[in-house]
Image 1: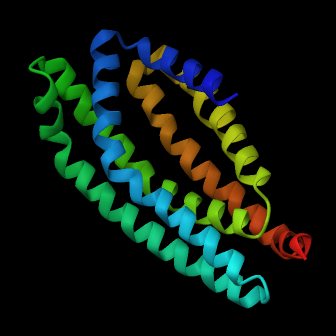
Image 2 (image 1 turned 90 degrees about the horizontal axis):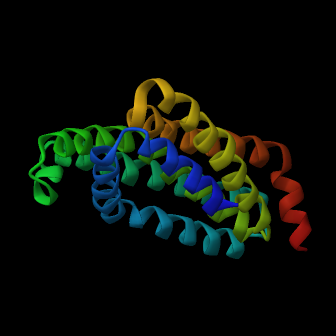
Length: 194
């Protein structure tokens, strides 16, 4: 499901032409260096939530700390991406269109990074409570309905930039869905493990 959605998304990016595809690949390369700690935040939340299952208050505190760390680190990552955006494309290409589009990609990606950090904290805590399927379903639904399909629509008018904007709807959509599930089902997730 994820690879099909990713192909639909890349098809939308490709509407911007070869310069947009080159910029997309450069942007992903640069972004991947900065986002790795968000996955560590998710793993830490998973372990700490699993260790804290004896108390709902402890699990909620683990989540709060993980959310703060995720938002803080990815906020810093966002600033780094914005700061690097004018220069990153030049390290990979001399084509001015690719350099400009890479800068735009990185700025749009930077706007989504806090959402990535927060969603990873939620996903880790939910997994730590024993539910590995909920984060998978949230990611799948969000990737299809908040990134791939909107990217197809937005790319018709705005090209690759329209597709790239959907990174934000996807990441912050994951946050909202995760928050809603945590608020409505957090206690049931915990009881499921016992």
